[in-house]
Amino acid sequence: MRNTLARRNLAAVAMTGLGGTARDTDLVVSALQYLDPVVHNGFPAPKGIQILAQPCVRWRHLREAGRVQGVSSSFINLSSLEVGGGDLVGRIPEHLDLWFDLLSAAGLHAGSATIALCDEDCAYGPYRGRRVDLNCDGIELGEINWYHTVDGVQDGRGRPATVIDCGFAFERISWAADRRDSYHARLTPLHFSRVQGGEILNDRCRTLALLALSGIKPGSRGPRRYARKLADELSASFLAGVNVPGWLEHAAHYWQQFLAPEVVSRNDNTPESLAAASSADWVEQQATAKLARLLDQPTPPPGLEFKEAAELLTARSGGREALVKALNTLADPLPTSQAG
Image (cartoon, rainbow, N blue to C red; front, side, top):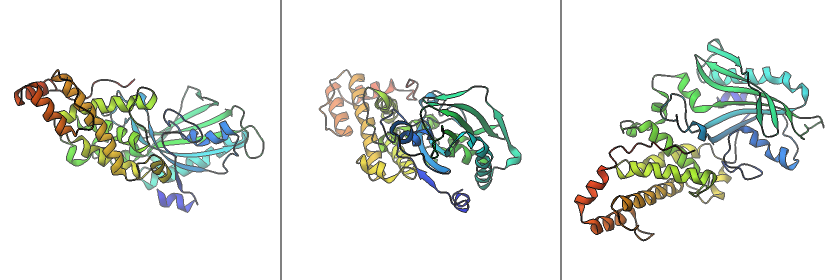
């Protein structure tokens, strides 16, 4: 796909992470946020087709993520974006041609593709328009959006702006091109594939690692609340003996390939191993608190390693027998609560 872009004198640009571009936002959900400086600060609109590689989180997918094929709560959104006047709609075939070339390079060909017009109007903040979905062999790979109205924005020639935004899920393209494995088996590291509920746990680890790498820490509001909920869900699996820190490290290495370098450096997480370590610390802190509740003991002093905290709690509660009994209440450590 990179070679296909190069032949057209195009190259993918890494988005600046989950914090948004010109202003703080809860979570990046669309390549349209690349245009935040234009829409909210009056910057000039970019010229020509922009190719964006954007790690993103979709919380509305969390209920199905890991359970339904092709559905993740975090993934790479590959997009082509272009700003122009009212005549920009005539450029949609150029974008379609680009995407058919890219999909063909990945092993998916136009003969197996269908385009379906969506009945719903698209409306996101100042953007209003129409959408069509592009499917291949029955799998939705992405969508083509034409926003015929962008409130208060002009193109480079002073005309009311319109926008073409074509977004495709990178992981879904990879899976659809070679479906010898299930979608989630493709994403799950081989050495974790036999863990009970591994596909759900893998989705949670991928999302928590991405939040950590983007500088988002557990808290009580917005994405920080989700980071806390994910760490709490994963703490039960950690207490059940799953190597959650190793899983988080694998996920951080994956995301690092797609984040702009300045995102990682500004969040003091330069090596991806630090992001994995910080998210693992969150899980261990939640596991310590959870274990204290199970044993009906006060939470150990902060700063203790999990092993030290667990030993202290075990000694306080009467020994190993009490610990085993408490952990047996976590017989089903799979995440069931929903971050909503």
